[in-house]
Length: 323
Image (cartoon, rainbow, N blue to C red; front, side, top):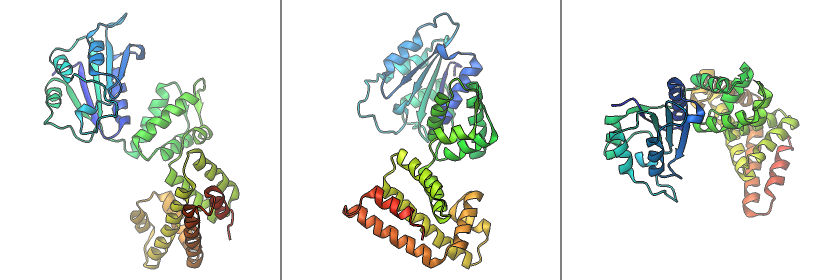
């Protein structure tokens, strides 16, 4: 095994990228000495050719191969580049000592039946990169921002983690957007995060139900505009709303059986904050009212699907009729 070739694999891209950046920083390789090749668009020949060339005005350089799908069971891209994988096998046998080669592949498990994977296991450093746990997500986000020269307060960091909890890929994409917007700014606050970072659709709909039940027209408008800005179909929003009202009915039944806070939290696999609102809504809303909302949403769904009702107007009409 040599110390110039690394293979990082795992189910999400963000840990792969984070591990790669940590390795580059540890090796003292600057960004301008890094060449990145997307294997869904560029060929192995190009990447190996770059790895074989000596660095320019530096002692060492790095070549990163992203989306190395040929190491996993992932389907081939529609327009697959012509890869000569034997070139990569040859490079593993005789790597360039002045090049740090990093290969990233998004997969849960490497297929040991592939000859190339066996060669990596024998010749390279192979590391599994697991998704970031929520408690670790705070540190990952803070370090990414600090590395780019930014500071972030506790409220803004909490807001970012909440909005990107769906997956590490979501966090990676939203972090890139935030960094781009924050160019030239030092401090990042919660207002900036709320303006730039897209919130999970399901979380937005949960907040929409809470705003609706609180008869908070301003919040309903703000959340609805956010959902429309994300391109979410009004019919899809109506379906999710119906599911949230069904959730209130389930919670009411749980409470009738004597379920406590922890029981409800476990049943819905929810955070403490979300569980608080689930129980609040279940305690405050009458069965008849919740059933009426579900019935109205069923009528709305029929009108949308039959074409007798404009989707956007129908949804807005429902949401602004609180009684």
